[in-house]
Image (cartoon, rainbow, N blue to C red):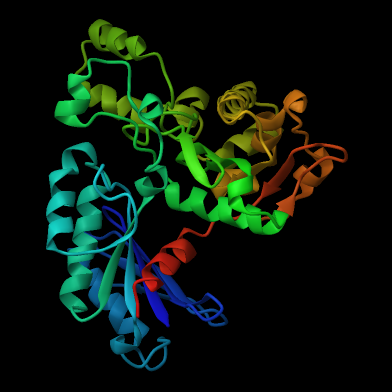
Length: 398
C-alpha cells in the first residue's frame, strides 16, 4: 500500500510517498516559491536530489509537477498514479467539528472554508492543496489529518479562556492546540521504547522548533497543551513571543499609536528569539553567538529554556506526576543547551539528564538522556508527522 502525504503551505508544498509495508519513504520533496517563479527539490533515497525551476502560479501546477516526477521513468518511483492508494493531507485546524482524521468531502471543505477567520495563515493553503490534489486524483481517497484533533479530549475548564463566555459561544474563541500530529507520534513512540501501554503513562512532550509547543498526555489522552486559540501562545519561539501579559500589547498600541494588524505582525513575526536577541530567529545562530560569549544570545537561550521549564512543571502538576519527558523537532532534537536549560533544577520532580550525553547526542537519532538514578526517563525522539499522517490515511483503505 502506497500513501502520498501532502503538507501545503502558503508558498510551499512538502510531499512524501510512503510504502506502508515497512513504512519506507520512497521519495520526498519540496515545492517552493509557489505563486512566484517556482522551484522543486525531489529526493529519492540513494540517488542525487533532482532540483528544477518550474513555473508554479498556484498549488495546481505544483501538484501536477509532483505527480509527473513520481511517475517519471528516471526520477520516479511508481509507474502510474493508480499505485497511490490514498492521500493524507496535513490540516492544521479542524475547529470543534473534526476531532479525528476523516475522509475529505465537500462538506468538510465547506466547513474548513468557514473557519478560515480563526485559521487565516494555514487554512487557505491547505484547502488549495486539497482541491488541487482532488482535481488531479479524483479516484483516490483523500484523508484530512488534523493537528488539533489530538486535543479533542481537553476538558472545558482547560480550554476556555476567562473572558466573557459570549466570545466562546459567538466566535468559538478557546484553546485548540497545534502540532498534535507530532505530539501524537512521539508519545506513541516513547511508549514503545518503554515497553508500556500509553494508558499507563504520564508524558510531557516538547516540540521545539521555529514554532514550539509543549503537551501533557495522561493515560493516552492529551489533557493540556501550550498553544491556544492560535499557534502564538506558550513557549518563546523563533519570531513569536509566546505567552505574554495582554496589557503589554494594548499599552504599546496606545503609546506607539499602532493598529491591531501592526501589533499582530510584531508578536508573530518580530518577537520571540529574534526580538530578544536582535540577531536571528534561528536557534543555531543564537547557539553560535552564545558560544562566542554574546550576552544577548546567552540571555535569549535562558528565556527560551525557562519558558519550556515552566510548562513542564505545570503539566507535571496537572497530571500529578510524570513518567517520561521527550524533546522533538528541530530545536528539541538538535539544541543541547535549550534541552539543558529546560531540564535545569527539575531534580525534585525526578528529572535529571546526563549532561555529557546531552551535549554529544547525535543529530536525528533517538537518544535517552536520563542521568543515572533519575526516576523520570528523558529522551530525544525525532518526530515523524508524515508517518503518522500516512498511518491515518492507510486506515481508510480497504
